[in-house]
Image (tube, rainbow, N blue to C red; front, top):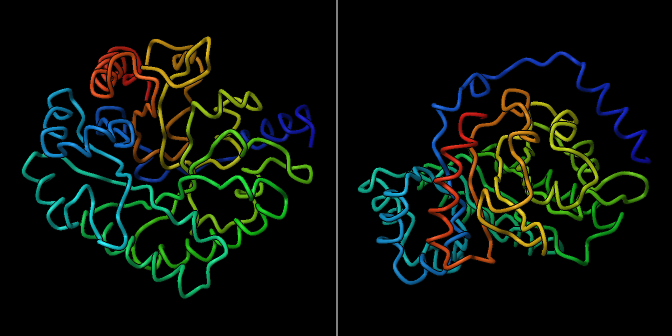
Length: 296
């Protein structure tokens, strides 16, 4: 599908009726300000409790975890129960986590479900709602790769949904390339069960790919983009940067949270810090509260 045909298609879809869920009726004051903890992974490794305490003082309330150790069943060196207690004591929450389920694309169903069970049990202990598929490994960036991906997402999504949780797929730039005439993300949207597989939109990668605008993307699967990653792009290097210091103007590109079906959002910066990760987290939330939060 060429870009013109694709945009015509997304425009048509945008005219379809949409029934909002109860989550979609929230306004920005009802959303907790979230952070993907990958943004401060160095600080979390050194001193997780004081890092969380400092993030709370900045204004962060909710987190998406990263780096779960499935063998030891630990988050940042703590059991799920211990980590939940720490969060409770600080008045904080987690709502989602990125897990290494992408490393099991060619594993047996037994191996896949055994690993997934550990992720589900840990997520339930934290009180999370989402398990996120973090990224598609390079070897699967092909038509055959996406055929395998949608099969695995349906398998995992069905199991996760039966546990009372939700599975969400996180996009990168390659998801907007064409594979046998369709974008990778189109294959996921069209070939996975919407009850089993939700979507996590990363606006940085949408804008860096420059294949479709966020509002048009949301129109491809209204109500299904439950999670957002909000981060900025350095205008020169195209690397990550602090919110407000890059080239992404969220006042112009941010989609309607109702149409998206948004439930949780997380600020994120994976690297390229001006000073250090915690200073960048502070700069980003300060800019977010002043300029972006009111738009959600």
